Image (tube, rainbow, N blue to C red; front, top):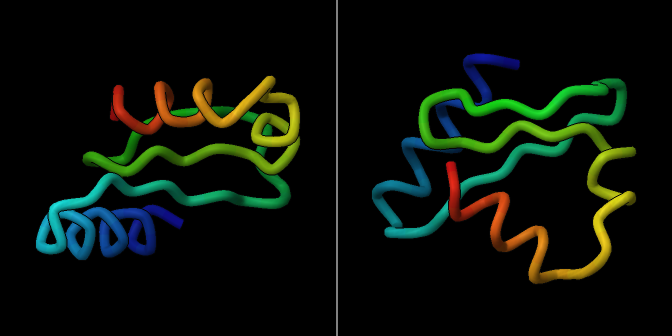
Length: 59
């Protein structure tokens, strides 16, 4: 998971975008490098897209 999140972060940095990795069996939320790693249940609990954008922008 750590290597995958780091790779996603590197690719997003080259593309000038934000990065997020959603895991099905993960209950936490954290950053690995500049990549937001979030569990599927946490993602589903978000109220709207603006809340997701805020989470990703903080990473």
